[in-house]
Image 1 (spheres, rainbow, N blue to C red):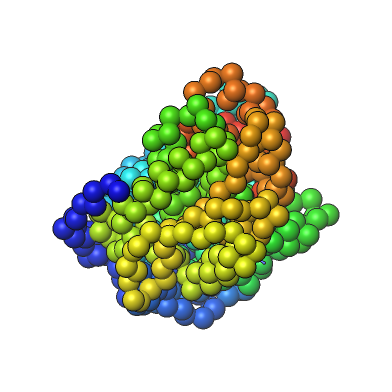
Image 2 (image 1 turned 90 degrees about the vertical axis):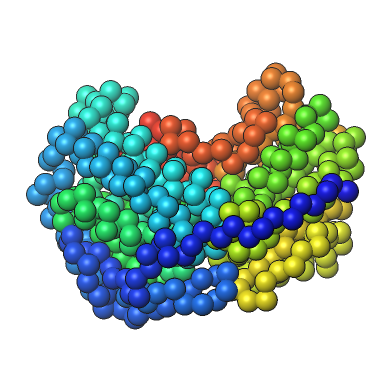
Length: 478
Ligand code: NAD
């Protein structure tokens, strides 16, 4: 057993988040109360209320779309790319300046460890704005024709797992291409998008270019169905994605969908075992496994299966689960009671269907939404835990003997978002990558994100790409 080190608590102060008692929606360049209900957003780590959030009602959706249309026709759609680029650079720098505040705010509202919000979410959010700022005056050279035009007004709906990062993935390419936006963050994590609205206002972004509407599924549904939009971009569950696709069918409005996943992380017997174990842990326990591209199915070659599972269990015993604001924490809180119930239900089904469940000894806090890191072995490909997206810190381990069997099992899913391959042979990586039906294939790493790289799915994981040059296409009239 590896020695277990004790760490003194090293909490980041919650004062850094500069939480306000209440937050308002952002429409036409101004903050105002929405005509919907006022809700309390809570800290999932201890279930205490963080702030009151005024939600949008249907009339606010109309106002926001009208404002975005006026901004598109009046200013933004006509502004030269180099001028738009200046705004995006300014926003990127302001995110960096307020990075610490945003990181603490994100960890409070979402439950993710500060180590991740500080080192991944916020820096990547700024990086997306920097990257697309650079494209704004070079669109004629992006491979989409000589003078590509923006699409118009975009409605964007995002989930709660990477609130600020998903907002940045959506906003940066849309704005760089000259579109205006109405953005709806998820109901459990509205705060960082509303602080981003403060940043946009401080950057003097013209009124209406971006509107931010806090609200739940009903506001999301009203937004995506709005006739004033030219384009809808959605990240979330496959079920809601299907509903949106039905809503938009025949309207001529453009749509991109980034949906769920059930990624295979495939480990061959020639892989560097310690490195692979770190990659497996990062693949499924990063952000408590609430990641659409999480490596939730571990496919391990039979000859090294016992060795890998033993090494994984040893590693999991050293993970620190607890206070998201503590800089030593590896695994934080689950985002909501509903998500926790879903993880529990699917894990129980794993036991009922005959898989073997294991978790390290760890003391979970009494209050808040917590789930211990969990590994299932003896999993059959037919089990629900091998087929359905759990969206939690739960790994299902399956084995294979040959590369062909690995490909067959990896592709045996309705999803196709990501995959990982661990082997020392470059030729095998390429052989696998050609055969895996996944939008992203990582080799000897996992969950690596970069604004220059396109990201998106096949099959029920959706369509369209975000990130990179490819990410411009969804926002250009090509
Ligand atoms: P969700 O689909 O329930 O909600 C996502 C967003 O859609 C929220 O803002 C919600 O308010 C809104 N919404 C709900 N019903 C709606 C409707 N009928 N019309 C319009 N909007 C509606 O998903 P979730 O539980 O918030 O997020 C988890 C899911 O998101 C997972 O399945 C995960 O795989 C997926 N996800 C995918 C990606 C990706 O890039 N592919 C990234 C993050 C999350």
